[in-house]
Length: 211
Image 1 (cartoon, rainbow, N blue to C red):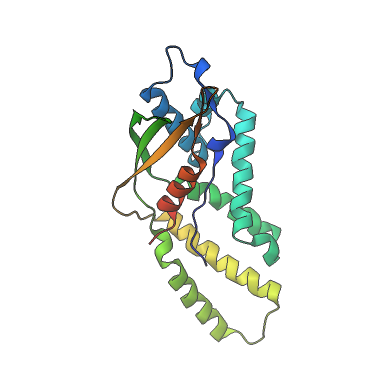
Image 2: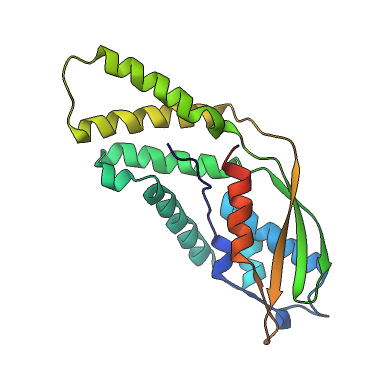
């Protein structure tokens, strides 16, 4: 199974306008903006994000669910032809996986183009042994088979075993040493501040891709 980030980029759907901030956009505002975007993306905590971006709770929740759909599409469940029940099980565990993100906004400084916000994070390394574990399990299953399964049956077996391994990772998460990452907030000519999308993707990959 190819390792990938789970990139839920809820934050890039909205921008924060300078006019909404009395006295201008400060380093504290920048930290709150990034923290709320990350919390909305990974913890499904939308309250501060909705306030920061002038969006609605319904809009934020819909974007979060769309990102869950993107996660499921990225692992190929639809093409694999697995059961609806298994798809729902993956949807349930996707929420738990997102919640494993371990991060904290630690500071910010103003730059020529906006702000640079520092995020301390511990990378989730549970994926590191996934391929080896899956290979071992599937080898054991193959050796016990008396008939050759259809492609759909084989995919069902494979994704069921992947789900078991993923659930174990969720139940017993492991992390690497703390690292630091910079997320940039860019200001446009209309004094609208937006979190850099590429930075969010890179942070997501750093937190979840493993070694």
